[in-house]
Length: 304
Image (cartoon, rainbow, N blue to C red; front, side, top):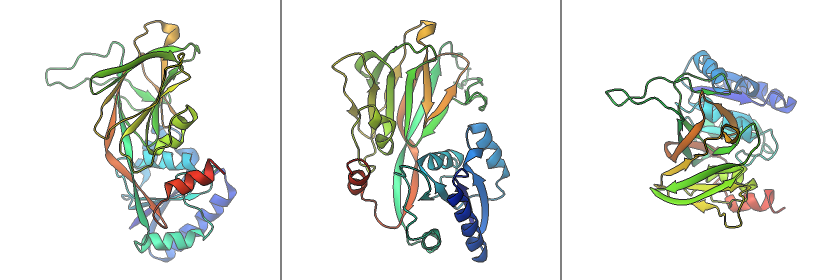
């Protein structure tokens, strides 16, 4: 068994706990690797870490906050091992409390005694302006798509645990966008943009944009306009099988939109014009000491 420990290396307590945890796991005969959260800032860095991992990861233990969990999900999205998140961050909505100690939690994980909390993910396909036509076999030729200006050539399909956000660009001008669901145009609006979130992401950017709190057991998506320039805008909760298409048709350069996926800037060689969004085939498993009580969590964290 190989366990990956991902620690928030800006938190001294997380660093101390990571060393204690590695010592314990090694004493149990478990193979381990250690990664700092600061080394997972973009996909090029994550690709380097993936190449350095000597063995497939059977379990990831995250010592950090929700952001560190998101980085870990994207690091391991091709493997999708269970993740045991322990809070060494701020909000910690995705994480477990460490009040009972990290060693008992790790021991319970090794013994298979923790509850499995399955979370749906979001699939995002990006279509840019002047995208080249497909070849004779229907495959798109390689394009210089990237992530954080240092991404991977040819990448235009992404997954997210929280959300995809199409927002106004560097010029700061509002954008015009439309939303279709299963081929039906639902609205066309002007504003700062649109967030499409999973149920997990409903407590993040989508919530800050006025969206609803959605139980993580819901497998559909949430579409929330950001600062819309209208009094009629509403958030929409979709069915699990729905396919959403977001279009940004304004051709004026000063109204170019910017795409963020789980808070990371996506950089492309030409303007983003369309997004195709749906529930991803893959899911993430978070390990819990007991069944997750979503309503108790929101009562404590949002309503005091």
